[in-house]
Length: 385
Image (cartoon, rainbow, N blue to C red; front, side):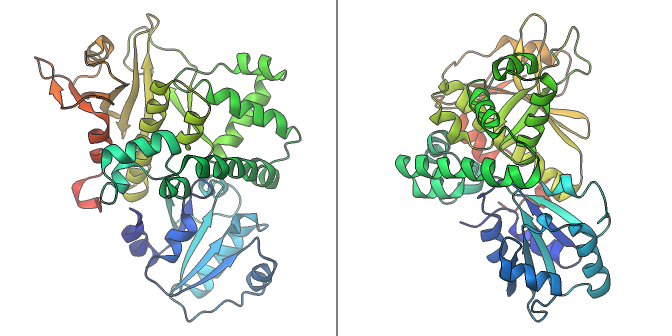
């Protein structure tokens, strides 16, 4: 399965270091090795490779050097900067890691002007549409998740076994490597609590009571889980909306299959899948074009709500409401459109057979698989799939 970013990464490697981040087992190493370039692969978790890295004795005759988990090296940014400044390119340099490398690059030695960032997500319907029918791809994502191994295996038992090891590795290895968290069990319970609250706003004080800790600690744990690509927040939009909005955020999981496996309402599972697809498309916009994006939700004091608002360069672009089977337009779409003129309004419905519009043509209703197979916010010149 070819990944969407391959062509752009090859282009960027000609002049810059490429940092490739994303969830553990999203396919970063596989993508790095299938770029069509001769390569040397060095993993900082390997004792032999660590020795080569510290001695700077990797093969310079290859076209690409892949540094995996390099962020675990002390002062890795300064070390990488020194290699780039003294040796330059070729060979090209690609750095991968399961933790969020863009977080690490913000402090200490700067790589400013020397790198481009790419973020790899689990599969979305649009990414696999040439290999799997969109309707079938959506069903797989809703039940098994979009991570390559369970998605491609297409087997529920395999997915359950994979998922248990996946989260355990994140919490027992990555978490301990990156943060001094003693109470790993409470973080596990927090993950379970968040799965049951997908689609709803999350109260820090409520979680703190459930976990018998402070709201400050819960906030810190949420940030860690975000840094580890377990969850991501969708925050409320608050500009130009009268009597808005709640300050509490929603949290979604990169692994939609984990949400489904927790027995969560099917509508929330669909909402999680749409959130993942939208975030992936917005990250492509940022990584390919450098533009600023945001994924928000809308809810006012009268509890009118729209699931997602997509903004690019602080300009609202698209309102998205997700439904399992409701073929009547949500009144909230039209309410919020009054404050967001010119914004595209869509209701995405899983069981809908064909698209339709309201009489005034201010909103459209589209089948979920069709929407997810086509959704993109990249300019046409930047699209590769």
